[in-house]
Image (cartoon, rainbow, N blue to C red; front, top):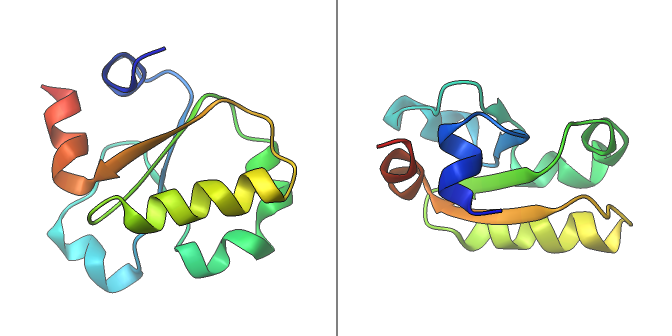
Length: 93
């Protein structure tokens, strides 16, 4: 499944891994904020989320790290790196 299709049609779960201070830049409607530093402590919560998962941050680096953390924790749900916040806005259009 393509990221644009997932985001635009509100399929799965969108996780924003930015820190709280970065959210003033804007948020994607329906996204759940779980800062990358909290990912290891919230694996059980994330396991229960509807897939596919789309993770994003400011540039795509932290969302890639978060994906690796989740895969290492045994999460098998389909995951996508949505890149940065502005990439996600493009997917909505």
